[in-house]
Image (cartoon, rainbow, N blue to C red; front, top):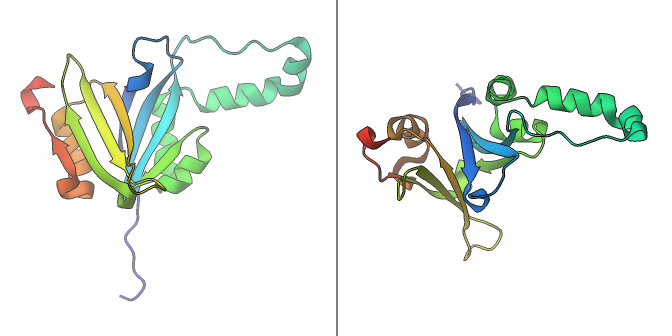
Length: 169
């Protein structure tokens, strides 16, 4: 069949991750990494119970409805999962979710799951505009090795390294 391309879609996500640089700080957002057939999308997800910005009386009139709609759209991992499944592609989803950034699998050089302390670290290294300086993102969370393998191994192959035994996660 000429011109046939398989449907690219959402395959799963890793929820409740914290950026390494946020360790030891009060966080307002956790991160979710949505996995698609064509890449990863890193999204901020508000922490339940985190304070919302205070709107003054004029701002409430001008921005209140829009802010309320935006907050309702971004309530958590379940809403993120539904929006990601509806988008179908990593880039399309990243454009629709506020503050999300897409990483196509072509630019990802390596993903490593390790457990140097009491919590898992997921390290994502990607090529940047400066090829000699790879972009390195580190996320902390409770990540089962088997789930990481299931979602990422078919898409990354030997670029995925899981340095944690299945029984330790």
